[in-house]
Length: 120
Image 1 (cartoon, rainbow, N blue to C red):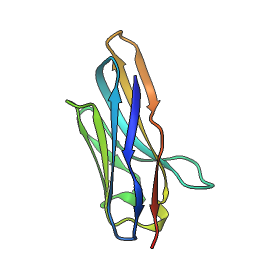
Image 2: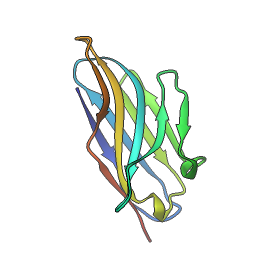
Image 3: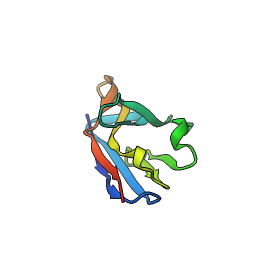
C-alpha cells in the first residue's frame, strides 16, 4: 500500500494550483484522508482533512481558499488551492488511513511530498 502525490509547482500570488494523491495496492477501503504541509524551518501542519463520510476540516488560514475532495472509486484525494499566498509555499504531503484486503490497517500512511511555491 502506498500513496503517490502529484501536482504542485510554481504559482503567482492570487493564482491556483491543484494537488492529487492516489492510493495503490491491495486496498479494501480508505478512511480519513489528509493533506499536510511543511514550510522551510517550520513544523509540518495539517492543512485539510476529509472523512469517509466526506466531512471536511480546514486549517484556519486556508478556509475559503482550499478545497479538499476525494474519489473513492479511484482511491484519490485532491486539494484545489485558490487565491494562493506566498505563505502557502511549502512541501505538501498526503496522508491516509487505509484498510488492506488482508485486514491490515495502514494508519497515517504518507505519500512523498510535492513542492508548492508561490512567488511573483
